[in-house]
Amino acid sequence: MKKCIALLSAIALVFVLCSCNSGNNKDSENQNAGKIENSVAVESMGNNNFALVYDDQPFYTTRSAMMVSSGEGYYFFVQDQLFYYDINSKTCVLVCGKPDCEHKNYALENEDNQCNAFIPSDIFYYEKGFSYYDGDLYLLGKNSKDKYAVSIYRISPDGSEREEVCKIFSISDQNDIGEFAVHRGYAFCSLRTSESTAALYRVNLSNFNADIICEADGMASEFNRIAGSGNYIYFSKLCSEDDTYEKWIGKICRADIESGKVEEICDNLGSFAVIEESVYFLNFKNLDFVYVCDTASKEVTELIKAPDASNMLLTDGKYLYLYYDSENSDTVNIVSTDGKIIDKIKVPNFYLIQGGGTDFLFVETVEYGLQAFDKSKIGTGVYDADTVYSIKEDKFVLNQ
Image (tube, rainbow, N blue to C red; front, side, top):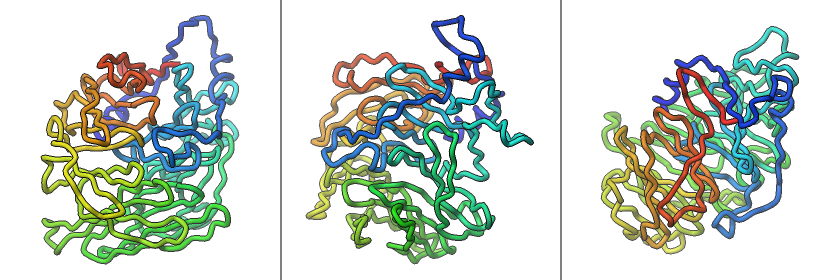
């Protein structure tokens, strides 16, 4: 994502509207922007235990570049602005419905004129992860009264309302914050508490009580890759064996979201994904295979030889998506839970998978911006990507 952010940082954020109706004027554009229809209906996305607007959506490569679904579309952030991609119209808009708003992605002297889509990263920590839960967006941010404290914020789906709902903890460095996710009524956040300790926090969103459900002790200890599934929150617990930081110890663990009871699932240092009661993972000590661990028996078996030397893995709750993280990579392998390659998607200038449920796969490309691949085409071998946004002549162009 660093390369993509560097590229976008060098671009003057000029929005060129791409529409088949060339007669739209600025007023109509501003009136339509941010008018988002959201559904809070519980849906299945390939996993019988998955409730779309109440469960975590760990369908991404990294939370710092993720997308979350509302059921009708996807939210994502770029350069301190909040965007929404409508899956029915296949258009992308800034989440702001203010008439005549110029959609500036920096602070204005008159706050009343500030764009609703402006979410400054020095206040709102969306790169730590964000969630769409029960009709609102949740994320971490700077406490309004204590600059060293971190709070949970709730943002309305049209960006017009922002509420600081509770304080969680205090920090000395924003980089100590790990990942944030909301799953089935609880918010979870990891924090490095010292050079050798870390903690995993749980916050009950019904009463905002916070507690620590897991702690780690060891050189450079940290919790990462938080992923909700069923009644559990899964995570990696890592630490260095010594102060040389050359050898690392990694465990995939899970905690019951209600009781907070934690259990270790298996050893691992690589990326992992959860489908139903199984954990699928790549082990950086041996990237030749994709492994699967049954959470009941803790038995680990080889699922499939890693296709195309894949070193990255994610899921949408139905399939596994594997690819090789390299500038020369152009293939996303789609693998079933029984280890069969269902299809391959060729993506020129492929860089990063930003996420997607069972409807779309969103892929960031180095030169052409964000592409949406229709997953109903899986198994056909034929894909026509829709452009969410593109980069043309040093301009950031929304498909609006």
